[in-house]
Image (cartoon, rainbow, N blue to C red):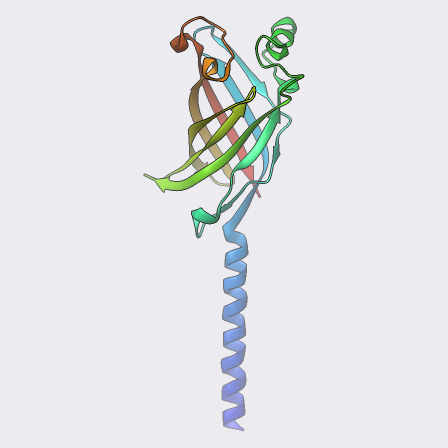
Length: 176
């Protein structure tokens, strides 16, 4: 009788431990379910937002190599606060919404450096794909990220000189 009680307690303890580990594992994976993306063309002092976010991104906090950042935003949602400028940016000279309706990103590496989540990946904009790195900090269930790029590298020439086409991009991702 004592042996049966001992085995029952041991198996109950083992089952409880497995359930707790499973719950811990499930809570370690966080999906990105919402995003705010803002940009500023530095030389022009023009800022705006872009939305139409679609993503299949998630973070495995136990093993970042299992994580994935992959998503896109819709060019038609570019908003700078001036209707005619927005219309012009979406046209063929700049973002060419008709030919390239979405701006896409797919991570190639995700790692932690100095307390930040560093995501490197391929940004596809106007049919051109280049590698960029985004650095994120986490605050509760929010990831805040920043990166810089040159729109001229993607065939979007706002100004003649490359350095005058610098764009600062910030991201705010909500995790579930």
